[in-house]
Amino acid sequence: MNRTMDILYWVVGIIATGGAIWYFIKFLQAPAPEGDRTSLYIAIGAALVACVCALLFFLRHVNKEEEFHITE
Image 1 (cartoon, rainbow, N blue to C red):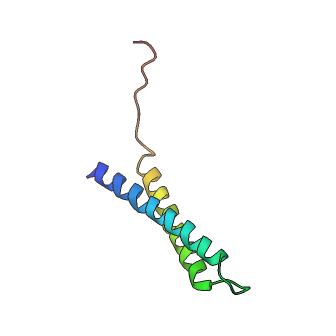
Image 2 (cartoon, helix red, strand yellow):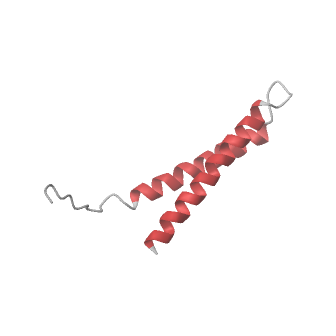
């Protein structure tokens, strides 16, 4: 279950990042001087989803201890 959630966070985070970039570019290319506000709001929302996914992924790995073998 732990590995499945990690993969889910990665996939959703990458898709949200791509969507944020796509909609931000769409906002910048709008013909109106103020841009397409809907695209901007979607881009901000997708960026927030990507940040939450990254935060959840890293918070799950905070207290994990790794073994370091100095000599082998």
